[in-house]
Amino acid sequence: MISPEGTIQSYSPLLQYLEEKLDRPVELVQRRTSLEVNDLIERGEVDVAFVCTSAYVEGHDTFGMELLAAPQVNGNRKF
Image 1 (cartoon, rainbow, N blue to C red):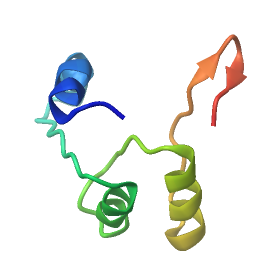
Image 2: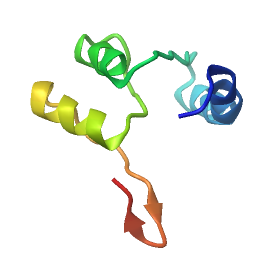
Image 3: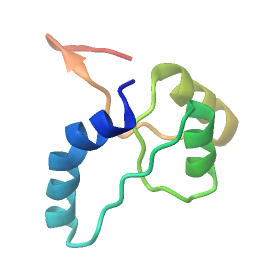
Image 4: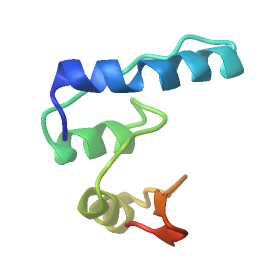
């Protein structure tokens, strides 16, 4: 996890890309904990989220969170 400012800096290019491709505004929403992010997903208050493995497993088991993408390093999934 990086700082809130670091997150904005790191993900700004991705947000701009998504805005162009989706032809709609994209807002970065940050929370302090994985539980808070999962709550936003469960309530439908965000459409997509970056979460760690344990947050995904918890969300999947609790309310059916679905995996959109997982990182790969040297052809191996890292989740």
